[in-house]
Every structure is written in C-alpha cells, then in structure tokens.
Length: 199
Image (cartoon, rainbow, N blue to C red):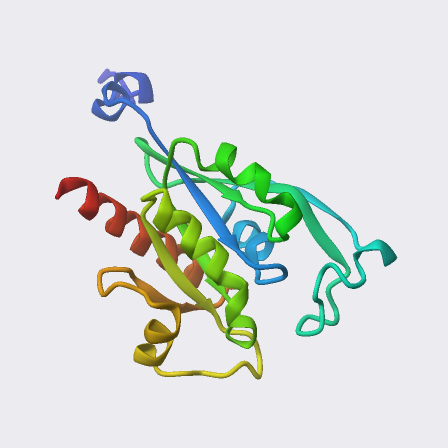
C-alpha cells in the first residue's frame, strides 16, 4: 500500500529558513484626518486604540468644525498588524494628531521605515507639522489625500505646490475606510522607502 504523501511543514519549508522582516510604519496627520480609521481598515488583529470621549475640555483646543460628528480622539496611539507573507510583517502605529501629544512622536518614530501623512483637503494646514517633522528627521513619507465626502478635489500639481512636496514624494488619493485603498497607500510608501534606501 502506498504511503500517504507527507505534507511539508512550515518549519521544514524554505520560507521558514528566511528571517522574518518586521517593518514599522507610522500613520500621521492632523486631528480627525482618519488615522484610526486607516489602521482599523487594514489590521488583521483587533487594532489597539486609545480613543477617548471628547469632553468640554477640548472646546477651543481641538478644532472639530470640519468633523462635527467626531466624538472621540486618540490620546496615545493606534496599533495594528498586517502579515504580507511568510517573511514580511507590517506594524502600523497611528500617531496622535493634537499638538499637546506631539512629545510622543520621537519615540514612535524610532525604527520606522517610513510614514503615511494623511491629509484632509478641507484642513490642509493641519498636515504641515507632520510633513515638516518627517522631512527634518529624514524619514521617508508619502502623502495620502483622504477624500472625505464633499471635500474639494484639487489637481495634483496644485496640492504639491501648496504642500511644497518634492517631486519624488508620492502623493496618493485614497479612502481610509477602504482596505484596498489603504493597502495601496502602504505599498506605495514601502516601495518609496526601499527605493530611497537603495540609492
């Protein structure tokens, strides 16, 4: 009687001999721009979220005029994970958007391969701090326009000029609610970061 074929175990497979490559990616941007939504749409594990209810103490501090239905805010970070294949795992860290939490950014940035800077075109000024931060620390980043309903749709050249983006910086239009759109944004960032590292 023929013996049943032996299934190759993961431990014995060629992929198991390759080292695991964990990549840390930041998701940054202004208050209410969609960072928590972006991480949550992609994470294969229940995302860690530090969102808290907004209280009257935030009045005059956090500008919620463009996001009137927003009732919570991130006070530390968001965290999610995506396993690309047997070798590559992406760890996503969503940064807090408010200025009073910027002291955490240095620690979150340590060891990051790059960052996605989310932009709400209704509040373009809110993303300048993140762009300046990553440029100053020479962290590769991609700018992702999170297209909110009824938000303005300016031409790419106009947005690049307004943000003073170098030509090599990727500029993507996306929807943070859609996993496929968010994943394409991450792929663009990783390709950009790897291309820069090889130069």
